[in-house]
Length: 355
Ligand code: CP3
View 1: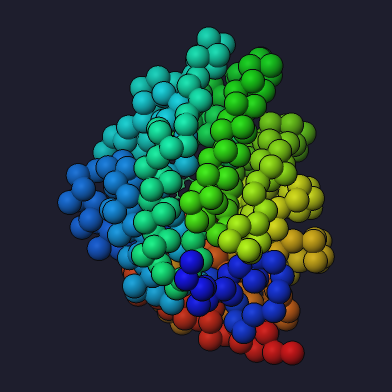
View 2: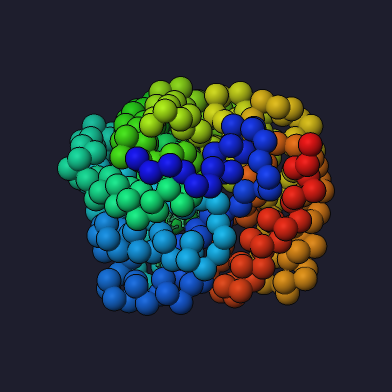
């Protein structure tokens, strides 16, 4: 195995000293890049891109060719799991993801197919292996999954939703069914992330995009509990090195201490919190990842630098910060602005890492 040339990201997740703050962007491979749109057009559609390891590798590498990023993230989607469980994932132009066979009743949950990692999800594992080979030790590779709750919202709603009527209806009327579904998903996500780690993912992130729509009590019962079970059962070391885990609950500001207590190495933050205040709340329990508002990238480079400076200043000196956006980069962002953001993090963070 080639030695890792840049391990700033892995070190920061373990709260070890670094020379400057590492940075990557959620959704760094995507539609804001013309080269992504070209590869996608050649592939025909998004799912073909995900399911063809060489193409998934190509789009994973695209942002790394443009920017001085400190990590690569596997190009895939959180909805590969429900797709592999038999729900029939498809994307309709401009409408986001849809399932042809959503979960509507008890029998659908009993009938869920439990996928094999080297069969139905073999294309994800192949992509991880191909990307690791292509990265050749340049930067570490992040693997990922959706949280059980976030996956369940798409599976029960049959796609995206604004009101979460069906999934919340099921949660409140039939908590037994919801737990049965989440239980199956937690087992599958655990095996999925461990398979990605075995194939070469050097850190993993759980995306809990919809945990923040729950009440505090329901968040613990229907989302956090299952993420805790996953984190507890993750492979902790591979290739002689720790494999850190990051948990990102969007809109999870009230529960950051609870998340920090489940055994993950880092907590991902959206932009609705002050990172310095969060650091005081969690102490040195976990590293923090975040948290610039992704829409700041619509502003001019000078304004972007100012925002980066203010987040670095708020976090302050010392270890344990991975810079990121508070959610995915948006598709209409000018790629040069993303470059200005990444350079600003590296340049402006050096003084915060002197002994
Ligand atoms: O970060 C990366 O670069 C890795 C790739 C990645 C994608 N999706 C690619 C993608 C990751 C980590 C995801 C995660 C994901 N997918 C989440 C959790 C993170 C988040 O954003 O909250 C969710 C909720 C999904 C489900 C999903 N996939 C939706 C709702 C959509 C459509 C929304 C949209 O932006 O149009 C997708 C499609 C998708 N996944 C695209 C990409 C690049 C756009 C597809 C395209 O049109 O090319």
